[in-house]
Amino acid sequence: KRAGEVLGALEELHPRREKVEEVFAVLNELGTTGGGNGDVDGVEPLDRIQIVNMMKDMEGDFNHVNEVQSLLAMAKEENITNSDGSPLNSRDINRLLLALRYNGFESGIYLHFSMFNHDEDPNCIKFRPSLEEGNETKVNNSDDNARKLPHYSEARTTRYVRKGEALTLHYLENPREVSHATRRKILWDQHRFDIGVENAYRKFLHLPDDVTFNGISDDDVGGTKDYDYDDQTNRRRAIYASELVNGEFPDSSLEEHKAMGTINNTTNSNNGNSKDKDEEEDVTVTSNIEKSLDDLEEMLQELQHIFQNTKGALNQALPSSGAFERAAALELTFGELVTASRSSLGNDHHILLSRCRRMHLDSIELVLSKCSDFLTEKQSVELMARFLPTVQMLLESQKRRLGSHHTHVAATYHDFSMGIQSLLSLSSRRLLS
Image (cartoon, rainbow, N blue to C red; front, side):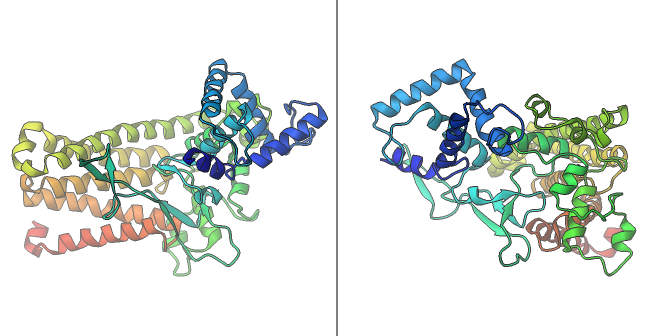
């Protein structure tokens, strides 16, 4: 019964069962497989990409076909059917797999969130499920193994939303601050839509044609009291500018697009020309920074895990584990990465620098909160002296891209305030020594 309820709910997720049947009915009527370009075969281009081509690829995978047959046999044995009572077929299984793929988040799949479209400038933010009081769920029917499990996730608006305006989310949960090339690939791989490059990306952001794209200088913002962080055009212009590497929008390619005939050379390269050496270097710069961030974030999470599991005997455990030395070295490494990335990107407000700075702040907070007994007062002041410039630059970048009312901006303001309070708590003599 439970399986039937789940299947019934999933029928309403994109691609809806009714829509899939409609698409294949058109193809059957025309006697075509839907492999052509555009909508010449009577199928919308996006439906062809997200439904027809994807199912065609599935049916060409021998292992996948065998797994589908096993699922169908199990469904028949357990009397699991579609909501209308009809038996499941291979197309139903493939549609369910696509629904899970297109609508799933890293933290799970949510029926209501499936109604939200992706936007590079979303007006909502999705909060990951958290363990809360009152959400106790028994594991293995044992009181000893009882733990608190999340029952829901929630979305909240990040700015004022006009009546009739669609609610949108950013489909990337963690981390959201990735380069355009990486973001484009992830969105295509999982959701089968393309945010494009340069001109196509401008259109995706709904930027007016008369808006300039040569970046946003600090003079544009700090030099005038009239700059509006919450103006939609300013915000989306800043989102575009946050991708620029040394003043240029880096190119990116999706080979699968080319193979499926859904993207042409003009869309895939700047001004219709093949990628030159500078464009390839721009992509290499961002990919190298992201690789470094991924590696360092893994180290940071490992250290956080160590501190969390040794909190009962922290003073005894830290010296033997070398965790303090590793945490201090990691903080310095993040600081060096920020400096090196600023130089190679040529853009103080590049999207990847926001992630660099955020993780630098996390490493400083880890050292200050977990290793305070091992720090001299001078070392604590030096850490805070590195903390404040980092949080200030992160705050400015976030305000430009997200607007002044965003949850992430509020959290960074709080970090900024706590840092200032921490320094002011010291006497002026100690502070200046």
